[in-house]
Length: 476
Image (cartoon, rainbow, N blue to C red):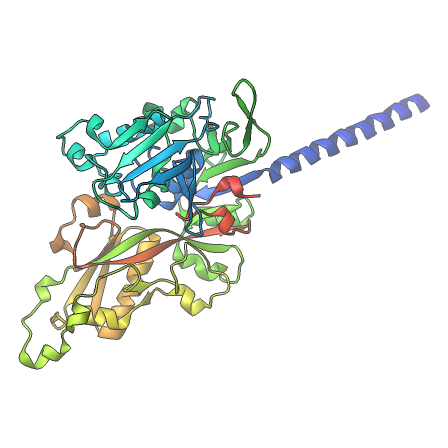
């Protein structure tokens, strides 16, 4: 009997020891995981529908480009270890580092970038890349079908160097190349259907897709794991292979049907971060340290009020713009200043609720813009914007502003992106709030469109680059 008791005690202690060990391992694994809630996934990883915040974070962490942009505005090396610019600003040379590898262990070369640029511009029917590359020699002619890619000013030099020649100086060219959409990709046929073929993709960034599955709640979950060949995490061995011991963090991207579901999951503690949340939830989190807003893109407000224009009478000449104001260029921020400044990384924490909840409109500026129009009595202007919480919130703010300051009545119509881009006519709206805009239009007014995010992890500038993308690899 005593032997049985002893054996029972031994089994009990062994069981408890094993249980505690497994518990510790499970806890450790939880610490090494970050769960991020999102709503929309990119359709593909090559030609994104737009430069949305979620798209940029996914592409920017799976792939990397020639150069990167710090949150301070400094342009630093990426897969290009260094770069040079000629005195006239027309020739850029990017020297590819010799310790950069794809996730399959293949060395990255300048030829990979050449092939990437050829692929993206050859099939760029929507001109997703055109505006950023339009000053490159031969790009315009190539898009018009007049020359072959061999005649475009993107070449490979002998010393694993990619050279890019411009036809005229472009001060923004280098910064454009820091955008996530210029991150190096190959395996192009797999990028179009990455959720099914993620195992066949060669990743150039800090992470790679490890698994795509559905959870019990039917939400799609994409698991990212560190790319052991990523140059910032690795050391090289004699056989030129690289191994990583620096980062074992696993990332779970969970796709929710609505932002509200994602926010509820965050509240229950199941998520560390929620991306791209609507402005109308700000009140619920104003006193929280969890709310951040990050500059990522810009939008435009287009006035289409020609039908209300009238000939100025002599008595009303004094109301017109003076010569100096009439020639004033419309620059980002002089019409709408959202939350005081234009820093790349902005923290909502600490601002008072009045500033936080409202877009700040420049009353005098819009007054001068509207002075040349005669609005019919009882005429209701039609504001068209995207069927998106953040755009609708902006439209509502602008509606209230026009009514309070100028007694102008408006109605808001929210439409799908595809309709606004392809089917909307000028006769369909009086005011359009959109990121789709015709180039060089005089009636376009630009403003910042920050992205709100919730994060239980305290974020700082080290975690977010100059394009507003969260650098998952830096989160400790």
